[in-house]
Length: 145
Image (cartoon, rainbow, N blue to C red; front, side):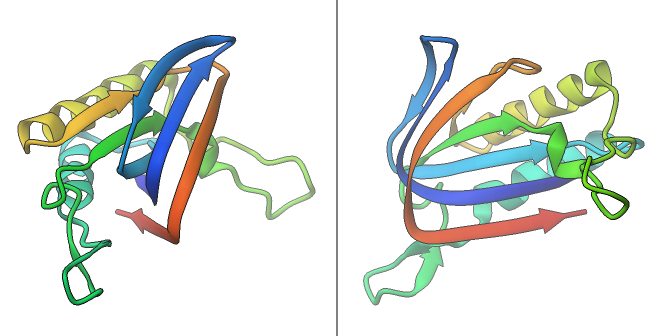
């Protein structure tokens, strides 16, 4: 399992011309599931997202989490995180989990984040999404289990 978290001042996600999710200060998290991943990895990723200290404290140090600052998370499923372009120019996605299993783990991670007190908004699994985000910093963290 892998995620890319970006600190934002705001973000908006739409499918077609229809707005789906919007957040203020927080994290946009692109979430990828690899073949063989399970519930333990999804829960560990949720814990990491909730407690990732990438927001500044009073001294200007990145010492506060999205939970600490009352921020939100826009969690976006993204199988392309497991795209492999080592051979040729067209990525292979053979490492990405099948949609049914990936969706279940994506939703489990969202549920766990909510249980940890994080306000979570979701993308639309499998849809072509348009995401507008205003990166803050920029701060981008890549995490893989």
